[in-house]
Length: 411
Image (cartoon, rainbow, N blue to C red; front, top):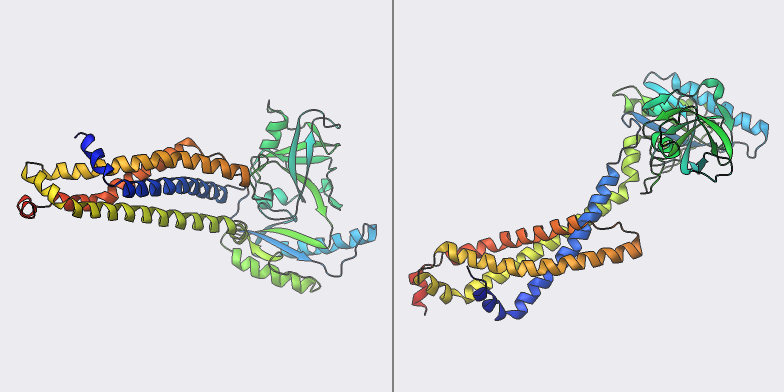
């Protein structure tokens, strides 16, 4: 099949062809970037935290009458309240582990700092998030300990949050960043200028944030039970007893001391699955929005191709009949319309690919969008070509079924 007759036919419908080309180009530019955004958000939502999320519960609360300030008496009173709560929670039948910690992956209180190989931070330095907790923090999160040991009870301090612990447990990315040769265990590092010894290494622990950053898994466990008016606990329920444990935890805590507040939504007793859903609510909304926009654009583009091809079939009714009478087969008529559509969609895909890259550059400049891979653009262009062929199939088959005798009678 020669392309020249097809191009000659298209030149007679320049405006209609231009509209379809622009529609295909716009759809490709938007859908390629929207699909890339959807993929990024889905990847973020499925990102593992490193903790065993099943049967994990967070308790967050506020002591309204707690003493303020850094006085020793106030610190000891706050710590006594926490220790009473921890003993109460460990006595519950549906509770397996309990740890004192206000930090939790995705959501939770945390601080960050610099970990380096020298006190002046002149050498290799890693930015990391600090998880404060007691000796039960690593077992409660059920982090995979790949080297070293857990904290010992004698190593746990209490007081205000600070990063001057004599021993720490680091995530593997922190260990590899500081010691590429793999000899991090037992080494002395400096947290904001204070020396600490690495006594354990966990495989992975996401920082208490869901943002995308190079230090997403740069986490450090600090043996410190923080004493503050805001207190938090991590509870691991026995397998299959998560909801029962949630009810027991709330009831038991208010029974032992009703002078506490758990205002929603930032406080209360919540399962980690609920917290994960809350943390990624905006991501799910973005995925839904971008998906709906993409589907609408694809449907509108497909409808435009079907409508234009159907219109051309009606206009060329006699021409088709003549071609059929001169010996053209049904497959020849079908191929003619498919090739015609391929040229139109191909032109639109070429322009759309350039527009997709340009749109991505604009998004990178104004909204910190990641670089759009050319493979994504190529897949989008291929999808538009396939969509065009599928959309043109019905009117093209209708044209190929025109009987030669019926068509020639209208001449």
